[in-house]
Image (cartoon, rainbow, N blue to C red; front, top):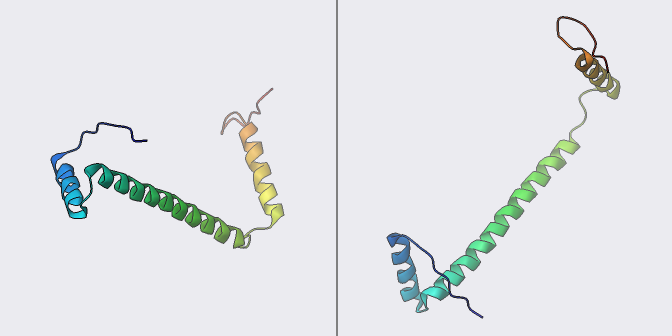
Length: 97
């Protein structure tokens, strides 16, 4: 079932629509349907391409060997937590709960 809709398009787009309909010997509605179907397919491929790219990046990152030992990382995290407990950088006072 077709639904009638109204769009506002610029003169250049209208000329292209009319030209495509004339060249293909189909209605302007058919050109719009085909164009939307084509565009929709492209949008999906772009998203899939981006997803695949992000997945490759993650896999490359996970395959990279660690540059520091776990103990060094644990010490750094402990130092960061301790620093966050201090109220001022110069005062050396600790926060009270």
